[in-house]
Image 1 (cartoon, rainbow, N blue to C red):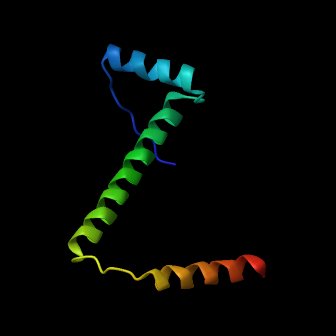
Image 2 (cartoon, rainbow, N blue to C red):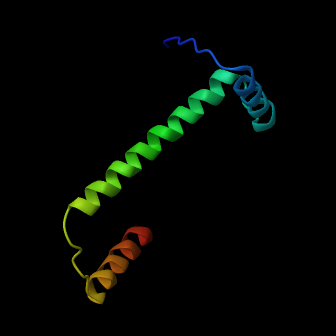
Length: 79
């Protein structure tokens, strides 16, 4: 695992320390890793949403499509 040192103003360090104490994190590093993971996930979701938006107009689905999907799901759960 790589190491990164950061400098925080006292106010932000106090905030991080409080989050660690209140949030059940083992350390400030654990808290910051969680924040970074969440931000990474937000970025992935944003990219997926933009990809969908840019893919063109939606195609309407007929009720029969969903009926077939339900039937396939039922078959899988009954096996």
